[in-house]
Image 1 (cartoon, rainbow, N blue to C red):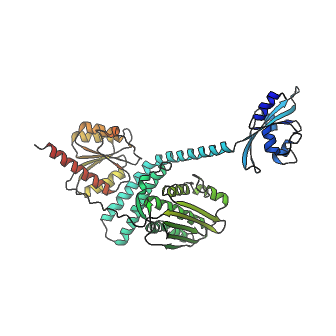
Image 2: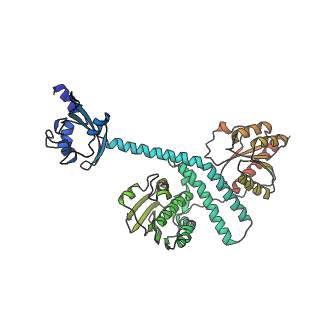
Length: 491
């Protein structure tokens, strides 16, 4: 080979070899000689010997497929010697009779590019997760709004402590459900502002055990198996964070433990305060996991439950734990069970929460509600009517505008997402007719409204699912605003 071409040939970083039709290496560039030959010369050796340490041509050799198809067929192989991936391509050289005379074997290390592709794939999965969750959030939050509203109405009608305890648990679960949707949407954009709460982990774990009781107690007994929880928790263990987040994380961990104990077993939950660290341990006696499963347990969409799993649980747990500046470790042995250990930074003293003063709402309003979901209308109507307000409702925005044109209302509550017209457009039309009417926009979407979006159209914004305390507080703010306006206009 000419020296100039030999120089170029040797300075190409990928491995290149020229082989005859019997797979014998005729020429090899310097990278191929260094990587594959080490101290030995690979020329005159068989390509399958230096590449695969085999005594015969490779079964998966892409050469013949390339000749038959007329298209270069790449082959990706993992090389145990280097713990890296290589892409191999064969370029056949045919003689005048269209017979194989020789071929060029090209091998490239693609380990780094595979890592980048895997990271890109993970980001695409996370992006898809955000799109999926935002698509169902509106409908899901609508349902939770009714659950939350009806529970709060029922709490006003009973004084039975056992029933109130159950209603409190349903209410808390509904709020956690809404928080869970938001946290999935924000998985790649965690909001550190939610980490200022002082959380009593003992209370959180006890609440989670009660929330999951239908699965580890009732459902297990129906299946004829027994799952026994052993709980050992220190008192007064506080961490900075988000209580809803932590309930979601612990619930996912316990559900996975229950699913792993197909024949029953023991679920051990411990929490200890050691120096400035809170140690939490969840241990089950289930089927356990292989090393390969443990390595992928936090990957989005990875599941061992087949069609029964969606692969989001443990990836969400990982995100929550990281947002809390905590650490998570998983140990498992097939047939013996799994242990998940969490380490949180501790807070010595609980931050005293300032009790919010009950809103002082003295006046009664005429209120018009517009929402395309009748069950939400009925829930809001029942609550506001019980408070003494005059309430009218409509699912049709066009008819609502006709009603508001004929009659003035103090407050109009409109949903954001409705068929035919958005809540923002509707609010603009109403304000053009009745500028003094106070507009409240409610929505199950993750709102990111700009000032220009709501200027001169929206007075207050409430996200679904909302508590009736939030509605009452908003109405009290409207009352203060109207009083201030009357005071300013007085002579």
